[in-house]
Each structure stands twice: as structure tokens, then as C-alpha cells.
Amino acid sequence: MDLSLTEEEQGFADDARAWLAAHAEAAPDGGDLAAQVAWGRHWQRKLAEAGWVGIDWPAEYGGRGATAVQVAIFNAEYARSGAAQLVNRVGINLAGPTLLAHGTPEQCRRWLPGITRAEDIWCQLFSEPGAGSDLASLRTRAEKVEGGWSVYGQKVWTSYAQFARYGLCLARSEEGSEGSRGLSLLVVPMEGTGIEIRPLVQITGEAEFNEVFLDGVFVPDDHLVGPPGQGWSVASTTLAHERGTNFPFKEEVVHEGYLAQLFAEAARRGTLDDPDVADGLVDAYVALVVLRTHNWRTLSKLAKGGSPGAESSWVKLTWSEMTQQLSETALAVLGEESPLWGRWSRQWLWSKSASIAGGTSEVQRTIIGERILGLPREPRPEKTTQSQRR
Ligand SMILES: Cc1cc2nc3c(=O)[nH]c(=O)nc-3n(C[C@H](O)[C@H](O)[C@H](O)COP(=O)(O)OP(=O)(O)OC[C@H]3O[C@@H](n4cnc5c(N)ncnc54)[C@H](O)[C@@H]3O)c2cc1C
Image (cartoon, rainbow, N blue to C red; front, side, top):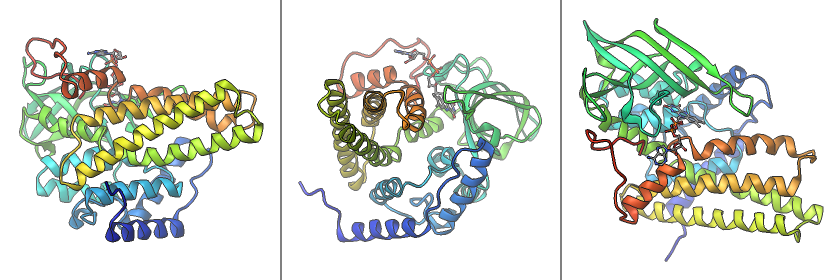
């Protein structure tokens, strides 16, 4: 098996690395979230103007028509450069691919360029207080009115809603429908009347996500993505990209860096032969190798024109466990009294969300059991063909 890059791919990697080395800027250290978002918009615009955002999108929408392998290469190079993650990642990773797959050419022309340049931040209005893993039990409703829809309901855990201009919203548009039937995918103007956004503070102390209350928010007809009542199939594209192909290549490189730092720190402290430290480092290393192997498999599938399918759940699960394992190891290596603890403490706290966001580990295990291992299906609510966030 030859896992090396072709000459063309190597040339692409070299170009990306050279551009990032010449132009990457350090993100502001600390400061409030609004200041970080303002800086993030500036940085993403700079990247977009050089053609390094949404690189697999068609050029007319701000991309450069890159192949899936080039996307993976770029994500790895981006992580290696240490640059801050994109501020409009919901727009780039979720809204963009959904619009490209199901939006009209007019919707793509209207929204995609603003997403790449971070002029319009997007959020994902899917989860509700009673509908997370079982997303299809959602209750937010869209009532048909003259020229559009009136949306009523409550969403929760909506990352970056307080900065967003648009929200990709899954709502029940057919009265009396249940489960995955009778839903529509609407682009909600987040600055419209009838919207209240209440930030929720996470254990990291930041308030990245929010409760969003929708009380008769008007959504024009041309903000409907895909046919009315077919929202579940449109949203399935969004969900596939949530665990999709972007993040694992980046995370592999990011965690290589974390692990190298921890090895060096343990060696400096002379604790490499401490059983807790040694076990933690080796377990984290093994998890990283497993992730890398999954990534190679994904890459060869993508190179042949395929898409990841149910294995993306395995990648998501592997990554969640790896990032939590590595953060625990940081505790063993550094101890809470370490002067380095400040930096790692955020990572440790943040890693707790890895097994929830984008579909919980329990749900990923069910998908792996049913779709990869062929185990018997978990009982589903009677009237739905499919209901879970998968
Ligand atoms: C950092 C972060 C950012 C997020 N950002 C967004 C966002 O921007 N937009 C958005 O729409 N959502 C967002 N979410 C929400 C996320 O998608 C949900 O939290 C997730 O889908 C789980 O739903 P829930 O929290 O309602 O938990 P629940 O679905 O209520 O699950 C509770 C527990 O029950 C378990 N469980 C549920 N069903 C099953 C089952 N069938 N079998 C076994 N166990 C089960 C779960 O694994 C979990 O342990 C975010 C979440 C986090 C943590």
C-alpha cells in the first residue's frame, strides 16, 4: 500500500504550508468572546480572499474546486500552522455543504460568498430541550403565511447564535405530522423580530452556545431549502457533514502536537516511568494511531470518489475518546499545581463536550453496531422510519 502523496498533492500541500507560514496571525490571547469573533471575521476574510476557505466549493461561490483529498491535506496543514479555527465553522462545515446539495443556484449565489468571507455568521437551529439525539421529535413549528412562514418554538445549544445573521432551522411545517415526516429546513434571519437569544455559560466559563426562542419569526418563501416537508432528508446532509470529513484530519495533527508536548513535559519532569503517566501516554498514543488509521481509510475512500458513510461515526467516537483520554493524561503529567495547568484546564473541561456535540457516543455506538457490525436494530418509535441524530 502506497500512502505517500502524489507529486500534485505534495505541491498543493507545499503551497498551503507556504501561504500559512507567510500569513498566519496569532489570535488575541484572552479577551471577551465578541472581540475574539471580531478578530475571527478578519482572519477568515483574509484566508477567503486568498482562496483558502471552502476550497472544495465551486469558484463562483468563493471556493477553488479542490478535491476531497486536497481538503484533507489542507485541513492537516492548517492545523499544523497553529492558526485559530474558523469563526464561521458552522457556515463552512454545515450550512455551505447543505446549500450546495439542496439549495437553488440563486440561494447558493446569495449566501455562499458571505459564508466564506465570514460576513454572515451562521448557526444551526436543530436541537431543542426535548429533541437532541432523538432530533425528529422536535416541536418547533413553521406555519404557512402569505409570502413565507411564521416560526414558533425553542431551540437550545445553538453555537454562535448571538453573532449569527442566519440560522439553519429544522421545523415542523405539516400540522399533525410526527417523527421525521412533515419537517422543513428554513433559513431563519437571526436579526429579525420575534427572536430572543439567551447565552448559556459552559463549564469553560465561555458562553458560546445559547437558547433561542422563536415567536412568530417571519421567514420568506425563498428561504426554504429543498422541498417543503422534506426537511429531514435535507437535514441528513447537514448531520453527515457534522461528523464529516473536515475535523478528523485537523484533529489528528492537533493531538499529535498535544501528545508531543506531554511527552516532552513528562521527560523534563523525569516522570516517564511513573505508571500512571506511562499508561496515560501510551493509551493516548494508541488512540492517536487508531484515528490516523481511520483517516487513511477515509482518505482512500474519498480519493476513489466515495463518501465516508457510517464509518464517520467510528471516527467521531475514536476522536471523542482520544481527546478525553489525552486531557486526563495531561492531569497525570502536569498535576493541578503545574504552571501549565491553566492552558490544559480549558482543554480538559472542553473535552467533556466531545462525547455529546455532533451526536453522543452512545448514539455513535448504536450506529456502529447496526450499520457496520450488522447487529439487530434498536427499537424505534413506531411512526418514524428514522429519528436519531445520525
Ligand atoms: C459543545 C456543543 C455544541 C453544540 N452546538 C449545537 C448547535 O450549534 N446546534 C444544535 O442544534 N445543537 C448543538 N448541540 C447539541 C447537540 O447536538 C446535542 O447535545 C446532542 O445531539 C445530544 O442531545 P441532548 O443534549 O438533547 O441529549 P439527549 O439526546 O437527551 O441524551 C441524553 C443522554 O441519553 C443518551 N441517549 C439518548 N438516546 C439514546 C439511545 N437511543 N441509546 C442510548 N443512549 C441514548 C445520550 O447518549 C446521552 O448520554 C451542541 C452540543 C454541544 C455539547
